[in-house]
Image (cartoon, rainbow, N blue to C red; front, top):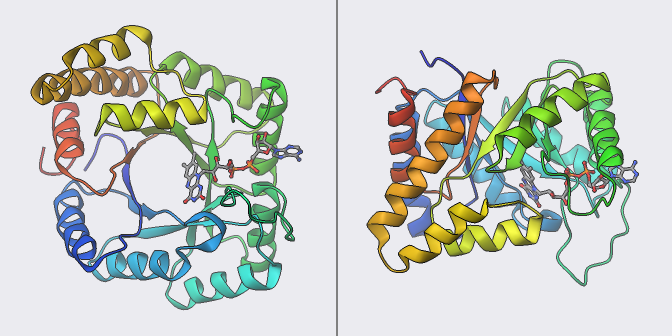
Length: 280
Ligand code: FAD
């Protein structure tokens, strides 16, 4: 039994080799007794079938799996059909998102925001679904005013979200502030921190830049200074992220959701250090 619930996120592999590799990763991480695995959904529904196939494969291996589902550009009919397919497979848990359309694609559709999707799922599927939504402790890059972004998050909770998973971050104070501020707005559901181990520093720095996430300067400079010294990058990255997780756990985080990039080694090591997982 884990001291706090943990979950792991994958993207749907797009090659048979990737499918095989993911089976091993699910087996490795499954040994840590996660509450569930989640599988992302490509922008504009581009991975619809692959997301479903990946979720079904995880469920067959005996673990709970939750598909992500984004609504921008989708019709109510299309979303209802996807939900029906999940229901037929005994899946009652989704991560509900607005999503971003691939650039250059038209944005017409019947849903504008994730709150619309949450409301639709609740209305059409009932109370027994577990609906997770996205949260942004450093705010969503598309909203200029922090207070408004908090209100938009609260709308998702009021529309029926059961819990939230955050965007990754390296600043625990931003997380604690977010939880406090949204509680004051009456959005009182568990907010599970999304944890991004430093799988590849350059790539993660790029995501962070794109999504408005701060990597502390001292961490970035130290990482960059290691250059090609992969062992030091790995060791220091683990120290930083394990320290972050320890602060989050000590501060009352209700769980941890790991962005795995479909790899197990770093996440396993992190969980081992934190004393998480049945194998720990
Ligand atoms: P929303 O909550 O709808 O917010 C989007 C923006 O609109 C915000 O700026 C918000 O402030 C603003 N807004 C909301 N409501 C209103 C309103 N009523 N009026 C005006 N403005 C409003 N993307 C994928 O494509 N596939 C995935 O599988 C995926 N998984 C993710 C998982 C997690 C845990 C996270 C944190 C993100 C994920 N994303 C995924 C990325 C996500 O789709 C993008 O960040 C997207 O830009 C916003 O989605 P959202 O659900 O947070 O949108």
